Image (cartoon, rainbow, N blue to C red; front, top):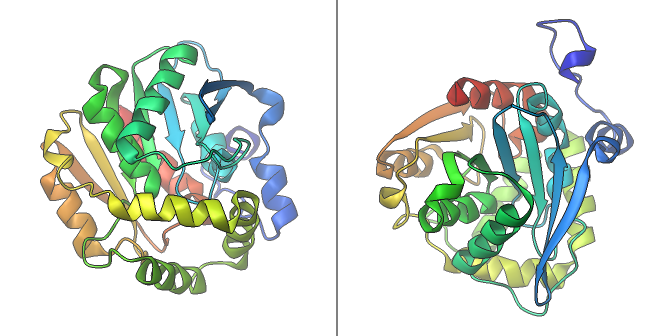
Length: 272
C-alpha cells in the first residue's frame, strides 16, 4: 500500500474481486481475538503499531471488517489499527436476535476494554456511524475522537425500500468492483440476518445522540453519495457540538473501496 509505492503516487485501484481480496487481506499481519456475550460475538482484528494513536474501524450493514482493507492499509503507516466484525457479519457467527444499537455499542465497548488499550479514534461507516455515536455517548472514556463516514439513516428516507433504492443508485455510479465486493459480503451475511439488522438500523435515530457527543467529530461524505445526501449530512454535522464536515470528491457511499487515500488523509489530518 502506501509504503510500497512512490511518495505522492495515487493508490492502486483494484479492478477485480480477486485483486480487491488480495489488497484487503491483512490477516498475516493481524492479531485476532473474540469477545462473546451469549451468542453475540465481536471479532477483533488488530494491526499493531506500538506508540501510534489507535483507530477502531466499525463497518456498516451487510459488511465486515474486510471491506476496510484498503483504508486500513493506508492508515497502518500512522496508526495502530483495530477493525471489528460485528455479530452476524464477517467472521462473526449469526446470533438469534439483533441487538439494538445502544446494546450493540455496549458490546463493542466490552470487546475493546477486554482486548484493546484506550482511548481510540472511533471510525464508523454507514450503520457503523450509529454504533460509534452510541459508543461515544455511552462510553466516553473509550473514545478520544470520532469519525462518521456516510452517516445513516437519512431522516427523510427511513424505510427499507428507499434505502435499497438509494444504494442501487449509488452503486450505479461506482466501479463494478464495489458491487462485486458488496455482493460477496452481503451473501456471506445472508438475507435473513441482513433484514433483521436493517430493521434495527431503521429503528435507530442518530440525531438525539449528536448534541451529546462531546468528542471532536469529523463527518465525511462522498460527493456522489445517494444514501447519505448532502442536506442530511450537513444536518448531522450541525448538530454536533464540535463537528466538522469534509467531502471526498467524486466518491460515493463506499468511499473507502473506490479510493481509500483521500479518506485516510482526512482522518490523519483530523487526528493531528
